[in-house]
View 1 (cartoon, rainbow, N blue to C red):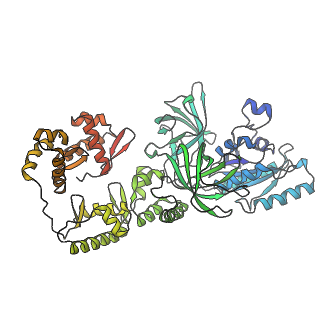
View 2: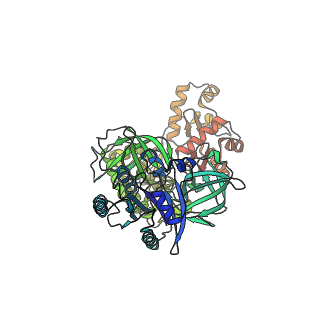
Length: 623
């Protein structure tokens, strides 16, 4: 069990840890000289057969950022209050932060009882009970102790050992990630980082992604909860000796993560709770401090509800100055930039930018539903619930929830969810959407017998469904011969194909120039055939509707056969991992700009997906 200390400055947190473990966690010379905890300190001990670690945090308000960095959701809180001082400002703020970060177990120690008489002790204890009532510590033991004299320390040890005995280690269903809170170098060992494992597990010899250098590093040795180990699990505090990077390249706030889950964002939506006692009204786009894991960023806050009310939860958008490694369900603390006070905190329920107006009713409704799913904290049910509502991008979902590909495959219920490329939709939702689209198309065909069909945007408008769900259903319906498509228009399979007119003589002259290793751009085709460019463009539009060619960019057309050949090239490259434009160019033998046009077309039809300077195949190529 890992215990995080909390409490006002000079209330004896460090002394309590020393009395329990014999270790002075003030490791910095400045801390020892001033008698003031500035940064995080760590100590471990065994109590009644239970391994217990302590994270000592600063109590001074100037170092609140360090305090937040030392708290993780799965920890046990040890709130320390001095009997001679009673409840002080950082007692309250630290308690608020623990509550907002989702801690659910803890103990309270009333320290320095040798500095107070019975009346003072009773008064402070009563104040504490009132203060703790609305928090997760409402039923916590209040243990009277003195780190100086040793009074009550054995009782505190027994209480913490009892708490440790009730801790149940629940296997994490997510991929490994660890926010780094300390980094240093040791002669003969090299670079060492420490932190609390948020999710998953890590083993000696694992290759993990280090955000500081955006590359993989190797775990050479591992210490979990103060002891050498071969593995560390979610909730463990661990130190990792890593190869492939210098300590000077890493800082607090960087992450170690599983290699195939990397995703960052500079925007998020929170199910937000306002801290009690915040003294002023919150305005849209106010500047705030954002704390997530061990990272700290500046950002701006936007209210999605009209106002935040203490005791209730609302929705807020947060825009961050630089990206964070955020996953769904993470807890975030927001502090005021001007007042240096905690505004509140919340649970991450979205990590993508709004594609409508921020307060658009449909968005608020969707975010409210998502917040309920996220609170379930079980990705399998969340995925199914989401797919019942609309089409879901599986790759985005997987990374938002910090799932490896194997973990994602394990929660994907293929009896209930249909997959096309990376998109997912519940089969019941798919069937309902098929019926709606078929009905709309049949009505259109009956009223417009000489017209072929409707475009994607027209179908979206006539059904009032979201575009991704309609697109998914059309692709699936095309693959299963329920729908047919011609020139970007969709029709029911029962609709006979319409003969599209085009200049057949001109087509035969154009064909050799387009159905070639590297097709001519249309400007060159016009000059080669001595045809006015505008006339050529008009004729090519008719040929596109007849599905004779595929337009991959404004000025470049390909034959379907050639695009299939290039799709095969992408597939062959993808077998060795993500590939670059240069690798694709070298393999297919076309010019760089032509290759870029083709790859961007592949991205658009969701056959490939770009990630920085590389691409990978994510779907099936359908011309």
